[in-house]
Image 1: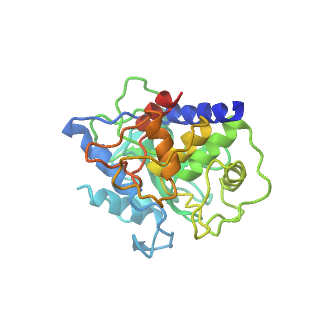
Image 2 (image 1 turned 90 degrees about the horizontal axis):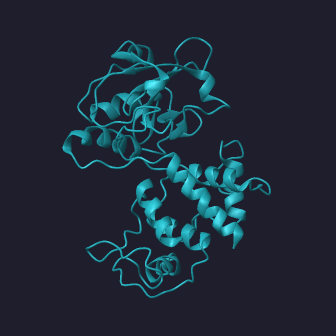
Image 3 (image 1 turned 30 degrees about the vertical axis):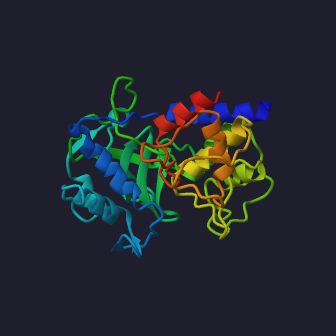
Length: 302
């Protein structure tokens, strides 16, 4: 029981560290749309010189395409993009700023999009389109060169600001695993066996740890989907395990079948009054979990 409640605190800490409430006004939707567009392509493979969001793309082509889909034109290369907009300091980053890195020792060679909470989304050479921490002490922190504001977005996150009202952000499954491991000081028993998590994956040990602890697991194809966002079904399992909620198969949700894998976990949340679902009678099993939503569920489950 103590471990389960520590897990809940670990998840809650994750929520607090990435908390970004959504805005109702249309003025802030541009920043939200930019981030959501960028995240739609998580998992797209990296290909040097590539420009395809399906078969492969490089870092500057990725930022160019994402901005273009949101009405802003950028030049093709990283160096050209660095010449755009207004320079901003790391402490004043806002959602939508372009962040630049020197990864090869020969000037600016990598670019990504800042999405708030010290995170940026980019086309990584090792993982494809993914989300990383700009302050990652093992790599990105020391590679950071500068940032440029190429467009103004109302209501975006200002780094270090407690009063800013940023766009919605989400956490990937790998990031959730890493946050839980750090909070609980879990130790992985060997490398994960998922076919989509190589031993050199930055969160490989964390993924192995949460798997061994029965907190999060992969799918029937032996995939963990580390770059995918946490779904509401996965959230139900995590919270059910965290708070030792009694499994229950009685739910009124039209999208949760009697054979659905997460039925007992969703039933646990429903019968403990943690959630009543959506007004259309669904639970939203495949919906992506907003950090504010996860925080609310945790508060209700306690």
